[in-house]
Length: 226
Image (cartoon, rainbow, N blue to C red):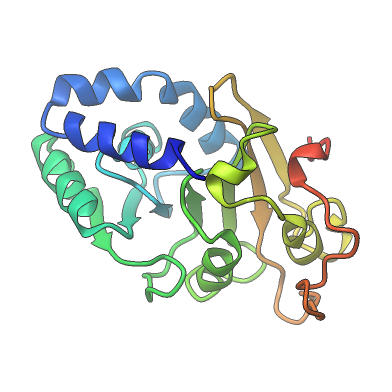
């Protein structure tokens, strides 16, 4: 049973009406986002998709303020998206951050160079597949926050071997070289992993009922890429 995600979503909605509470809530994420910006080489000329922004879009706000990038924040819950849009306006960032309400697994999204996928955003495989239509092949970058060991079930990530087989984690030789990870001392996630969309024609096709996973493993048991 997933308990953490709904509790966090409720807390964020309660805090979304206050700029002070927003900045208090966002403070622990400043270092997280700064490391992610450096890993994905996000700059002022980039457009960034923030997938699963919630009512408190601190990742979108920090990317816009620290990297000075243009950000499109997406959330499946229209109430959360509306609260995020209102908060961003209060922060004076409406010209830098656009908020969309919709399912990131199927919503047609604008072109971007980078996507940051929140821990709670799901289903991961379908979101990644959908992002392939928005990010440039070969140079598109996706950052995924991965749960701490033991919390995979809270975020629908019990079986994540598709990440290894389809997006090059563990076997990067067939894919764009910009792979890596940064690590965090956060209560629910301990690292952000960078994956690059393969160049056209180099992506391996998965087959079989298990999506190509053989001897399914949990990504949390892997050492990750450095």
